[in-house]
Amino acid sequence: MFKFLVRRLLQLIPVIIGVTILVFALMHFIPGNPAQVLAGEAATPQQIEAMENRLGLNDPYPVQYFRYMTNLVQLDLGNSIRTGQPVADMLFPRLAITMELAFYSTVLSIFLGLIAGIISATKRGTFTDSAIMVVALFGMSMPNFWLGLVLIQWFVLGNIPVINNFLDTAWFRPSGWGNFDQIVLPVLMLGASGAAIIARMTRSSMLEVINQDYIRTARAKGVKERVVIYQHALKNALIPVITVVGLSFGSLLGGAVLAENVFAINGMGRLIVDSISTRDFPVMQGGVLIAALCFVLVNLIVDISYRLVNKRVDAE
Image (tube, rainbow, N blue to C red; front, top):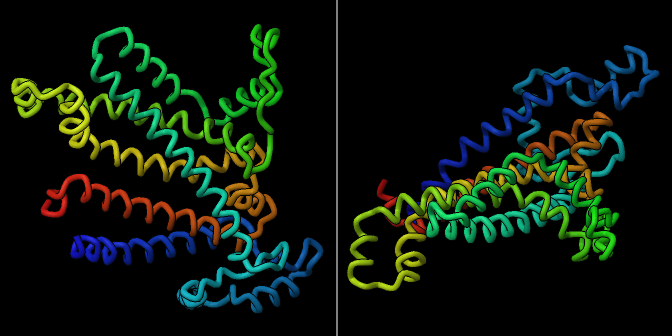
């Protein structure tokens, strides 16, 4: 296990360097000039050029990248053009909220997706199986922001047709983060599509494993069906599901931008969107870099999970 971890960590080094090069290049080739933004709309060309020299934007790109990496290893992401605050001080508190949102949504996705997938696989061909797959297909197809708006209409404004005549359903608050009545709806908005994907993947993987010879042998020996499903079949069916969970968590970090804007949550995604609209390049660059590094870290955790579930992964 130790060698496995060391090898995976060493493999991350070129990936992280590649991510920093990509983010650095993207920020330098997108439209807009940070010197123009910092100097103001009324600045003269001479003032803009002086600002570019002060920021080092006229230096060769390798020199700028080396300076960027030197600051990065010291956790110095620069200062915001708009507020003058250190970017790290602005991003990390917001990152905690976004990670919390993505974590709760992933837990909900795994819980609902695994249960639905196992029930669907063990009741293959029945009405229950068909109903679960139809609901899962609907969950995968609907846009997240549309679901968020529907949830606000139903459970914030209490506008559920017919039901609203008998029951007040305005149970949750429409904005903010921290209390239970602020967390439920954005987590449900982000977790629904992930649960649908995990349910379909779990069903498919379980059906493949259930048809294996060792499962038939276990049943022939009289092993209880619950033991066959949860101890023999599910463990071996989890590897493709873990892959989906990892990719789902990464996409949730990106999808959190929508949830944070729909529910007015002050997370990192909302900060990045605000920095794009105000052309605050240091904040934009720092936010994109941290989001990319989080995705890399999630993939590392997925690899470790493979190894924990199936030791043959190391040998392969």
